[in-house]
Amino acid sequence: MTDTVERAIKGPSEGEHVTWFSMWFLGAVASFGVVFFPMFHHLVVNRNKHFTREAALEEKIAEYLRRQGKKPPMPAGDLREMNAKTWAASIILIIPVFFLMYYLSRDLRSHEAHEDAFLAAAFPQHLFMPQTIPIKKYVLITILTLGLGGVYWLYRLVNVYNAHFEAQWKVDQEVTRLMEEKDTENPCVKKRFVSHGGDVWGFSRKYNIPLEKVLDFSGPINSLGPSPKALQAVQENAKLIRFYPDPNPVDLLEATAAYVGQGVSADNILLGNGSIELIYMITEILHPPFKAVIPVPSFTEYEKAVLRVGGDVIFVQLPFYFNLETATIKKAITDETRIVYICNPHSPSGTLYSRELILDIAEFCQKKGVIVSVDENYIEFAPNGEGATVAGYVKKYENLFVIRSVTKFYGMPGIRFGYAIAAESLIDKLQTVRLPWSINGLAGVATLAAFRDTEFIQNTKSIIAREKAEFARKIMEIGGLHVFPSETNFLLVKITSPKITSTELKEQLAREGLLIRDCCTFVGLDNTYFRVTVRSALDNQRLVDALKEKVKVPDQ
Image (tube, rainbow, N blue to C red; front, top):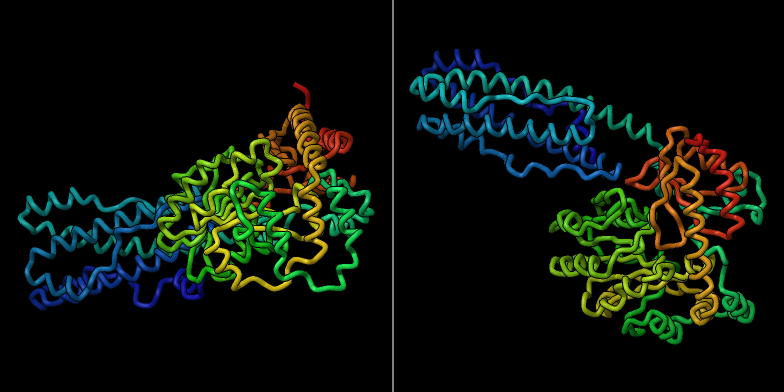
């Protein structure tokens, strides 16, 4: 949030003061009504200043809710600034006075109702704003008294505005304090940009456990390791490190396109130093200010990439079972939106979204000039991955940007090779911001060999499918743990027992050389979620035994 907004929220802005009706009324009597003109002008000016300041508070609350992965209420759209001079001058015609009092009453009531919605969304246990001004009652009194009751209406209107100003100043300070307290209570939120699975190096140093003895369940990497043919290719081509990498690796581009299939050609392929370079690269062609829509929970680097180039992030909370609700996504897209991120299969849940759902969003976004970035890093694990990928539709939808890598399925995170599938027009734009020589020569030969290792591909799919089913069943049998259905090589688990948090569980398992992914750092999740990667039957059983001991749910 900008310093200007922060200063506005910290206290009442200069000039936003209470209006003493008795003083103004006596002045009006003494001046035969002339003082009413500056009085109404003063009231409208204060109204404008206050509503502008409260819009800043709503934005701060909305930002706070997005950090928690919650969808904020829609901002007020009908509380526009009123021209104080025009309205003050119009009261000489008498009738506009009653319209002005009606508008001021209606606006304040609408404003308070809207503030209630925002405050209740962030702090449901607190009640800040009362409802005020029975407009119908005052209108009726005014009519029955042939207009004289309007004086009482004006008296009540001024006093209610005064009360609202004073109450809101206190509320602003209290809301700011509560938001700061909540952020302090949840340190995971601040760690989301530095917390990823698969950090066996840091784990080894912290717990003084040799690297080869670490059982890593945190990184969703193929537990079978790299393709044997890829390892052989690296060994046989080690001498290539004396040369610069090929700046235009035609063979690699064509082989990647052939591997993807779906009618994709080499002109639709863009290479990157892992998928992470491509995630950041796509934001380089977006010009701030812009907004990005991210359904959460999801990979935190999407948000970081957007913030890095000056964009703003709009989080859309996915429902409990992480279904992709296209209507909700579309509603979050505005004229300022430039990119939407979708992870399919979804991380960290493992949910596979249908091709039809994603293409529905792509078509909607294409009409609005919005890029749809689809992260398919886990697509090879999904039994129906070929039926769900949208790689073959990049020619029809030029706003589609499909990202993949050899990190997860091929078990080669250290080689850093990723690729994107997109329309030629989009790739041409990205070539202007792409760094030179980002793909090293050994990464290229390892990838070519891995793509051709059909035996490794089939073994990976059959072994993981078998072990995943058994692993999920055993975890569910422990009690106190709920396992979400997954189409990938990992399982998202929710702790339903109140006896332990995911952070505590991670720490206790770490002492035994077992590394799991604490999911409290995902926006939209909390410290009751953790993720585990499917490994061998022996490794999985070791984790199951440890979970039984740590969760300690008594038999029913």
